[in-house]
Length: 129
Image (cartoon, rainbow, N blue to C red; front, side, top):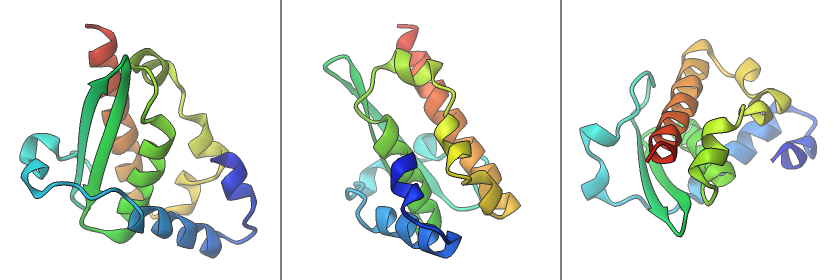
């Protein structure tokens, strides 16, 4: 993902890339848009679902805001298909490496932190089983 972002010099182009990720996000079933799947701390509504399969965690997500949908898409593209232990122990450093937090509004940056915390918490719960 760091290499993908390195292709762009301007943050406007990076935002377009993030929006494109959101547009290509796998459809999220309406019946999964429940309160227990909502990520708290996000200004927009963001749903996250996790399915363990073959020793790995597979995430699906959706949001009602296009940039937020792109951000959650970015996160799940990096972490979906990895083991719970790998995710729980990861430092999510790529987010800083690409400068994402620094280039978001404060409310979106808080939402990003909430998304990361939820993914890590979910992985930690599965790793502890």
